[in-house]
Amino acid sequence: MTQTIPHSMRVISTNEKMSQACREAVKPIGLVPTMGALHAGHLSLVDRARADNLTVAVSIFVNPAQFGDNDDLEKYPRDLEGDLELLRRHGVDLVYTPTVDEVYPEGFDTWVDVGPLAGKLEGLHRPGHFRGVATVVSKLFNVTRPDRAYFGQKDGQQTLVVLKLAKDLEMGVEVVVMPTIREPDGLALSSRNVQLSPEQRQAAPVLYRALCRAYRLWMDGERRGDALREAAREELQAEPRVDAIDYVSVAGMETLDELEQIEGRAMVSAAVHMGAVRLIDNIVLE
Ligand code: AMP
Image (cartoon, rainbow, N blue to C red; front, side, top):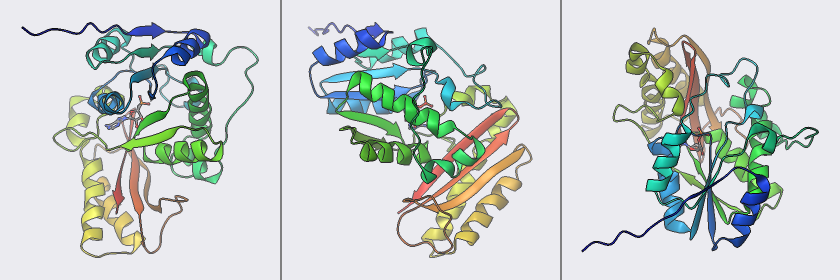
């Protein structure tokens, strides 16, 4: 006879209760910060956290501070009930779902700025984005005091910003970076993918294809940054459903400065617009 082990998941929405729950929880604690509308990419982080830790906490918070005026805060997909069901099935112990007022109460005035690294690429096109990310991540770390925190390579620059933040401020958290989960056609899973029209969805794998083209050149021995950037850009430009290209980058993993010559680890990344949807993706050359 199979026995099901009852598993209770607590959903908590205040800082005070979450702090207390985490203080009382069995250590180590693994934290997975998310904005909800969960998919298999998020769940891969949850599963890894489950395997590594005795308590798994997931936060669901659409952080207004990381959205700009022209961003899609209002339209960002939300599905709390669906998310909670998935998290229950994946054995999560604590779900933290604070309101905006709980995270940014009246008078909130302390911000975390991660220096030049946060000003490149995404930071250039979404001013203030990483200030919002770094601030909310700091706050989540302080509320939950996790031993480990899990982030996806999908948001490549974000992982570098969080690693730097954790190191510079001695957060005492091990930051674990997990591989990008993709659809069979190569498109990186993203909560925003549901906003693509069927035609845009069909065309969207061009982003990964463009990065792969650069990757293949690099595998064949090409080391000029420009050659890789041009090849990826050419692929993107050949797709009429790409309405705009924010950037195509081949950058060093330390500073995210564009590379003339590739030596050591580098990240090929790009951001494009398809209608109202903005897609990002990256591949690490190593
Ligand atoms: P988000 O809800 O978009 O803020 O994402 C929460 C976490 O899940 C971040 O660390 C993301 O990098 C990660 N993530 C999002 N999409 C993927 C994916 N396709 N593969 C792996 N991790 C992902």
